[in-house]
Length: 437
Image 1 (cartoon, rainbow, N blue to C red):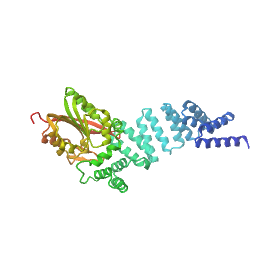
Image 2 (tube, one colour):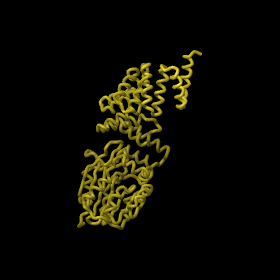
Image 3 (cartoon, rainbow, N blue to C red):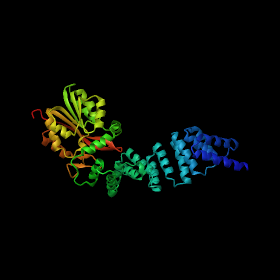
Image 4 (cartoon, rainbow, N blue to C red):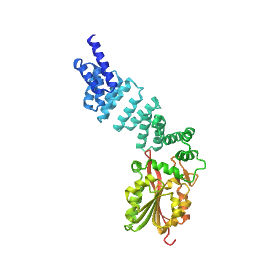
């Protein structure tokens, strides 16, 4: 066997070990080859790639640049150098490396997405967007490019485009990574209504009577929407993520607790004086804010798992697992303060509930609540959205409060939370039962 043939045999063995995950063994062989044949460009490149895989970036850079000095005709080699440079926060040099890779092979979508991220890191969002768009043309079924476009548009507050690109990514993503709910939302937003409905219909075939599927199917059909979420839907939904609820709300930038805290502070209330009721108390985020003002604080929620989290906060005098309307109907106590934050979004028709709340407030007592806000052009006073939540039209809501007997103290339009990074417009409202009523 000639020396050249021996080197090729050794290189093939090293690459097999590399592919099989034996990085230590492959590294030894690559280095053996280079000790005897320093100008073996392939061995030098694959050693550089291995070093990048094992986070030895300066060594990887040295090997890859030497390999390219020996042979600069391989697009993949330029690409791997670009990855190393990106990881070393050298975007300008990474741009050059990725551009060289694309010049040799312009049809690899991931060359374009990585070039786009390098442009973003170099604060050139225009070229980054061009690269991501190019990647979607090469491979429309690549979710990465759509998600990168979505994130870029979100950063630039182009929310409608960001949503559309995000939904394109959801549809393109591998089947096993998709939640039914998110996939149906994506289909619906992209105008594929039949596909969206089929998600729920197939879900119900597999799990007849599933509360989430039934509720969301009604939302998507937009025909005879229920007046509120069923108890089964609320329980199923919140039991499922009670342990991660606070983390999720933090990620969604939910501002309810801060709104209540700031508003109560503006009233200069004395400590420990109020009897308060927290409707839809969840894990107790609002209760924690209210508790310093109270001598009695009762929390109500349908989800036992959420109540267990609220118990751990130790801010409630009592906690009850109950539907809030049923609790109020049977309640014989009155309260100085009732909070209903992020709870009306699961109830469409509010007239009966507001009447019950009004009855349970002492004269002069306050109701604090939040809603998601329907567009002014919405056809109905309330509507069930494809999120499974309800939104309420501003004018109708204020009229209903007045008709019920409340005095409206404070109304603020707020970005109540984010959803997939996009702000959801809501309202924070304080109303009062008149002192003489």
